[in-house]
Image (spheres, rainbow, N blue to C red):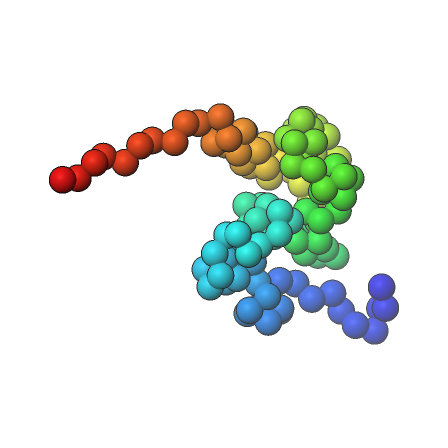
Length: 112
């Protein structure tokens, strides 16, 4: 990275590119896995945005959410910027995804 140009945090990004604003404007389906996870963890490090941090973690998981969900809290804490609270949040989101996948769809009541 060129030291002449400071690292831009998400708050310095164009509003249209910020994950929260993008989700509000376009819906969750428009965001990448890294952007969705970045919303959950809230922040990265002074040198790496939350999105970039999650891109790096996902890359190490071969961009596979099932692989991410199999990591332990300790595995996630090895990444600078991920403490126990963020690791727990990531794993809780993965577990919710698993449970949603297994859930049955409720039938809507028939209105006559």
